[in-house]
Length: 352
Ligand SMILES: [Zn+2]
Image (cartoon, rainbow, N blue to C red):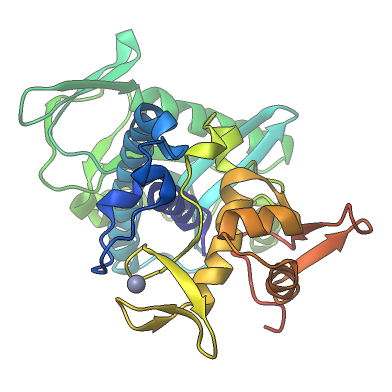
């Protein structure tokens, strides 16, 4: 899973946990809770407005991330159709540390023996207007709504200048070019940028051919040295739980083991284990995902008690079994034992 896919996964899990229980229909007759019969708010109600707001925020971030990912995929597809000169390499999701506190991130970096090319990929629908002097890129949607973004030209300019500094520090001579690439062929451009090229994805091959020269600036040795210096944006093992990152109240999240098919809360049945009656699906993966949800949404560590509370299970031994079956590292002695996820990304089963 790459970093963007992982970010999308975390937001998707948050969205599932922020859905109100009523909007998820498991097709079974609803047994009213004691609180509901007595007309008492069951806790979730307290955060109703806050929860809806958080869900809307997360869905909008998720929408942008998914559009960005789709744009990257379309550009990646186009890149596979280009014949690169021998000795070239294409890097995606590059992260370069120029100096302490100054890092640049590049969507696509193409290194050839005669030049470097940075692509800033944008997947935007509507009409775009580049107002460089105001430092803004403006998008007008079909319905007339206007959004303002940080100027794409400035973003790209910062990356070009960063890469130039990076090359200078490592005493590598290589001309650096950059282009903003629109992955959506239907984006209309009202005002073009004046200082840097803007191209549609389908013009990429032609644009690349025009940059090609016969001079080989980069020796094979220098190329190898450079390839070794390029860092790929890695998933951070010490990433913050989403609650901390987005300042969300952890009490808003739905608890329980949620079916991966219908997102409805499921239970463990005697002799059958975890099972969704509606989807007729086993729930083993749903249990793994629920523990992962607690770790990525609420806190980087989980105790037996927190596991019981979040998964809504009654027995200490059952929680212990679940925690021991997962790739978690156990810290401290009882009763202070906590479990922490090993490595970055997905929580795995212990045996795999
Ligand atoms: Zn289900």
